[in-house]
Amino acid sequence: MPFCPECKCEYVPGITTCPDCGVKLVEKQPQEKQADWVCVGEYPSLIAAEMAKLRLGSCEIAGVLCDGLMEGMYAGVGTMRLESVRLMVHKDEAPKALEILESKE
Ligand SMILES: [Zn+2]
Image (cartoon, rainbow, N blue to C red; front, side, top):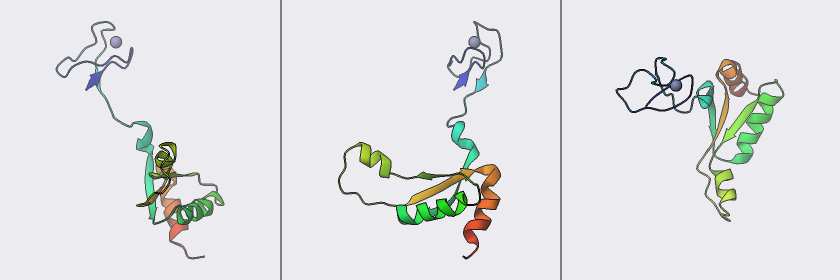
């Protein structure tokens, strides 16, 4: 879906210029904000993921846990089967994060 970088209006495919601003439309990039974050590990439990996150934290790498748990809690689900918890870091820090996670304590 093309959109105008100036006024952020979306247009139907085929239109290439914003009629309001006269600027060229660009292709929308879905989840642009998450594009800089990469998954560096998957864990069978939240505790395991938290441990890994703490290890990164001690090396000043900010990790974000990504899973279905929070959604489930918001939805008021009492019992839940956790499939996996993903640990995400900024892509610039991913190589260092992987190094830390792969090194044995
Ligand atoms: Zn515009």
